[in-house]
Image 1 (tube, rainbow, N blue to C red):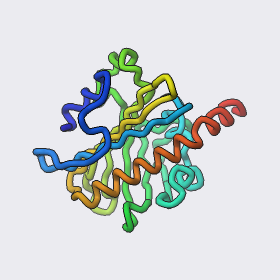
Image 2 (image 1 turned 180 degrees about the vertical axis):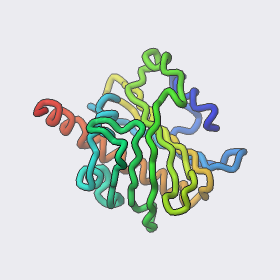
Image 3 (image 1 turned 45 degrees about the vertical axis):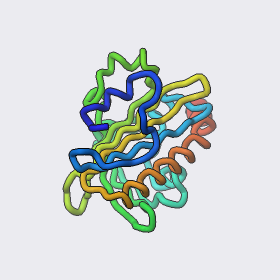
Length: 195
């Protein structure tokens, strides 16, 4: 799927590849990962990105791969859109730094179609290499609410990636979203009740 075809995520059912990676005709690596999240809803996933504001919370999301997280001055409590974070994490055996600028879903989608498509949240980001100051990827975590909870259909468009990096990104995404699915319902209930 080319970035320009991302609106296909709004269609019912599933696309031919929901988990996997391949090279697109334009040379980019496209990476997909489907995570089913029982007991979660899209609003919880959106809340998580606004809640995750320090290293401890970032490491909860992937205790092995996640190392450090630092937000810029544009982040407001509970809100991440328009802000960037600098993350240090493992991709396979390699430690990488990446800066993610979080963008509005309306930059990529016709949000008037969200209700019909049962969209619970869409997390969008542009990733850059902070040392070279070049864009390296577009990222979309498309969350669709279901009867059992929700499902996250993650998509990455890596501009300069190879198969080794694509495999590492896919594995990492499957693992971190699996961790999130495990703890998010209880954490969300606890934090929303106590605040």
